[in-house]
Length: 176
Ligand code: SF4
Image (cartoon, rainbow, N blue to C red; front, side, top):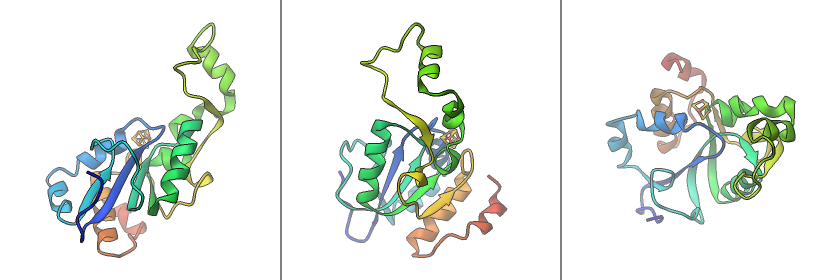
């Protein structure tokens, strides 16, 4: 179901080039997810069965960096259909682990992994460089951490739902 109830904030979560740890951190909110469910509705996410990004989403949390042509297409489409976009976790914020391949170039990396050559039909088309999300589209809020803790994610979501901008400095009290 991708049409939110009238008073709920529509939320999407997206998984680009990341390890899914940031999504695991969302699940680590545990019983607080039930509380959030009274004010938000997940309309697109690895957690739900929606296959097409909705026409208009209030808030999208993006895990992972932009590493492939598919990622590039996806994040541009998502930005065009999202009011407020959050880069969730260090891979989205800085490139982090996926960007470790940048100094070597795509061909050398592919050769190293798929000797003697990569099977074209199943390997995504890699960009020449892994990019953090803000180098491709406008990001409204950066949430560093690998992953950001469940406390940070809960604080961020409750502040945004209340119509406030989360105080990133205040998040240091949660640790990471
Ligand atoms: Fe995984 Fe850390 Fe990247 Fe999140 S920021 S996707 S936990 S490596």
